[in-house]
Image 1 (cartoon, helix red, strand yellow):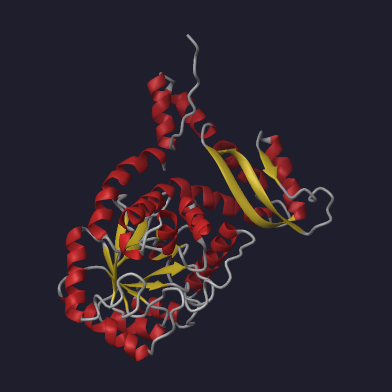
Image 2 (cartoon, one colour):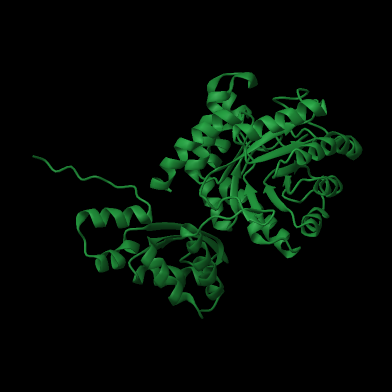
Amino acid sequence: MTLRPRILRLTPEGIRDEMTRLGVDPEGIRIMQDKASHLLIRVDAIDIRAALILKQDMLSLGGDVALRRDAAGLTIDKTPALIMGTSLQVGRLVSKLKGQPFGLGGLADSLEGAVKTLGSSRHFVVNGRNLLEDGKTLVMGILNVTEDSFSDGGQYVDPSKAVARGLEMIRQGADIVDVGGESTRPGAGRVDPEVELSRVIPVIEELAGEGVRVISVDTTRASVARRALASGASVINDISGMSFDDGMASVAVDAEASAILMHTRGEPRNMQAGLSYRDLMAEVYSFLDAAVCRAEAAGNPHERLCVDPGIGFGKDTEQNVELIARAGELRSIGTAVMVGASRKSFIGNILGTEVTDRLEGSVAAASAAVLGGADMVRVHDVVQTVRALKIVDRIKVRVD
């Protein structure tokens, strides 16, 4: 009989369980568990002198570091670096780097923090409560009270219909209701702030009065966010990552509100004009990391922040697919991660369907995002997504 080796795909807990099933000594499991957990860590724009030391240190530990091919000649000042090794090797690397020159001491601290995010519990604190404490994926229900949103524009302009839909989404299992009064579809122009306020405030007030505990306001304006938070909202969902309005960060601090920071390019009216990225994931990560740093500098606690790669905002079909598949990389920022792919055009491009016929594609994209590392999904079709994610959540603990 031919022995057929089996390549395993396990979480750190799964590695421990597998060794236990094999009958490995508990002390051996403790020693070997980190040897079986492999990491691939990217560092951007590291000093070339530090990069060469980094590579030699990691080689001495049995791992490696990939650098630009011209790094050895010292003809460049900086290089990206790809660190490859086991959890044990990276832990030992951190110890070796501390106190070394050329910024390596700071890199050691950053590496240590990044590795800790892998096994740490997730946080998105709203109204003083961590919504992720039980490990369940959060579902944000989309409530557009606009006339021209790409999918449901005009359906909920009437405040009574909007409130009824918001309450329905809560009954269907939504954790958050996201109320938006300005369309952000590709090509959309701005509306007057007073128009935006007249759309969202009555709906937020009524939903809050009906006992909806977590309401977010989808806006890029500090003035709208301030009124919405005073009316019962507790989360700001800003597609600009707080970059369109300098006052947004302080509004969140003053109200002790939570915030979702999204990546976008340009404004909705022109965001699909230029879709070329030199390095998509690196650019999205850098934008969101900087947005989180700005928010924290203004006084927003890390645990009240969440990031969103901005599916459909300045990206084409393949770029959207890549971001969904690699959503988990954003966890290294240290915040929760949200993905909003519901009914987006890339789904229609793949399936060949119009916006009214993208249910299966939307649920599939949400499921893939969660398996890829997302903590929350933003959707139109709440009940179908909630049901699907009950299955996905049971599966992801085995592969996450």
